[in-house]
Length: 442
Ligand code: ATP
Image (cartoon, rainbow, N blue to C red; front, side, top):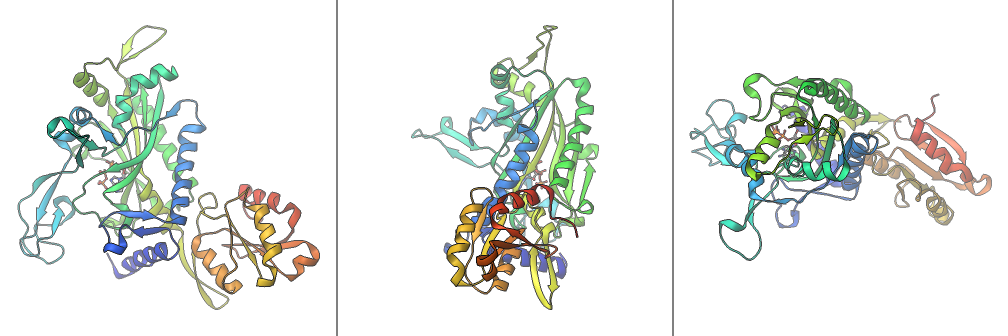
């Protein structure tokens, strides 16, 4: 990492803590490495990303349904999926400083921290294992899911029976996943507990290539809708030798993460998983997971196109993309130029003076049932604007002494710093319009 990119990450991590986006987990006890807690603004931003994904992938479509499976899973799920056998990373130790690294993330066989010699690589299992119930021993061993997609495959027949979906159709799920990563680094980019958003699209083998290209396009469109700068996204097709054991084709959607080797890091993978998973679970469980066509009565094992992204990584990309420092009226300000749909707070209502707290609070009570809002009275108006700029709040509504006379308030927009004076009784409509259509030009 160069000093400049290192600085950017330091500044962003500091802003995330200062404004309540992300905290180090267990900080008062020295912190638990690679575990993160989402604060008041972080939980809202995360939820807005999740809602956007769910709306795009499930709610607005007729061919994708959702589910939410248990995190603690039956060991046979991971036996059948190949995780117990294959889900390892190559671990190397430094003989000098005792640091541990993933072999494929270090160059040569010299420690990246101290230059010491590294051991030969050995397999390190990435799944978190625990035991369930009062019983001791193997029979009670269970695993925290390392990905959200396997429970989708295991529930394939249940979902088909319950929803009567016909091919092609998808099942989507988002939620926690756990991996005991050897080196969990770079803030929320790689943690041991994280959240995924995955969708498995079941189709005939003949149509799999077409659906693969379709979903790749859809997923790129979703990232663009989050306001991520076009030039900061790219796609990368996997080479033959790089493909996972279950996949016949894979494209990563990558973001220009400042710390990533080569400048680009994975946000999401789109993969053709063929019929690998359904077949594996059929074999292990002895249950029939094929799909029976109602018209032809033909039974097929569908192919699967998967879209598999991370919520934390998306949030980090969105934050990095939105972060900027600029000079306004001779003073430096830090702004999170978040897309207004993602902004945790949409509107801040600010009385110009403490003497105006009561009527301004009435304005807050009008707006807050309609749009996520805050009422902020502490510090000078300039300080409050700066605080809201750092929180990514797109609109500030200022109640001043004239408001008492003319029943109007001033709406200030975060990026252009444009202002409009607008009547209080139609303020909610005005704000809703701006939320839907953007700030009026000129
Ligand atoms: P990487 O190569 O970076 O380890 P991966 O290829 O193993 O990632 P997948 O198994 O394809 O990742 O998981 C799908 C998505 O889940 C990733 O694109 C990423 O957004 C997210 N993800 C995976 N591992 C982590 C992690 N340890 N922390 C945060 N997000 C993760």
